Amino acid sequence: MFRKPGRKHSGSDGHGGLMITPLLDMLVALIPILILGVVLTRINVVDVSVSKPVQSISKPKPSNFDLLLKVGTKEIDLVLNGKTRLKVAKESTDSLDKLHSEIVSIKREFPQEFEIKVEPESQTALDNIMEVIDAAREVKNGDPEMIRKDEATGKDVKIKFLFPRVILRGVYS
Image (cartoon, rainbow, N blue to C red; front, side, top):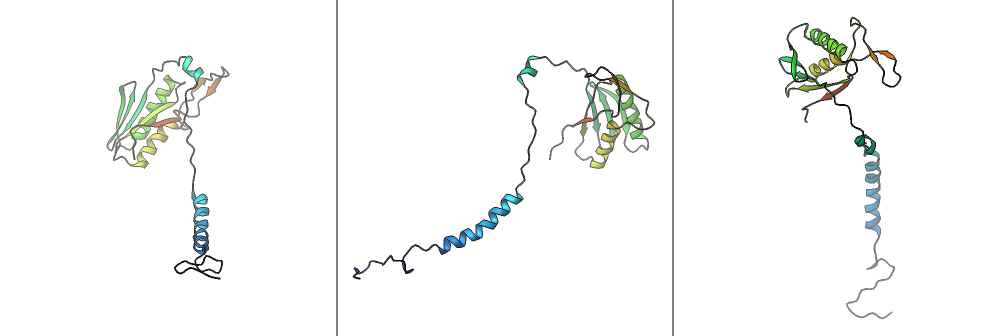
């Protein structure tokens, strides 16, 4: 075989040919990383309610009910429709009981409502916020029996929860 000087031989003897060994080494190193990436990837699905055309045509009934709990570091305010209904000091031993009894009386006035907004201050402990939410949600054994009319069936139903839909306002991370 005659070669011109300066020109490399590109045969299959490994001198100057296409070397795929580094490519295979790279793939062997990447395959476990790709498999772990698939295993460790978590896909979160967020259910966002989008208004449907039928809902936009039908007018929703105007709600004249706005219940807000302002949980501060020193006191708790219960505000109904923009007016302060109760102000309780957090240091008091019976503050949650007073708050719960006032929420029960509000539920007796508005048995068809289920939503309460909770607005904590920035320095409020999570345990304190959860205690207030529990006081607003749960019916206790000593509470009077409350009845509401079920819209679907038209029958009277015993209330098991006071305000089960809790909306946290002003909570940012």
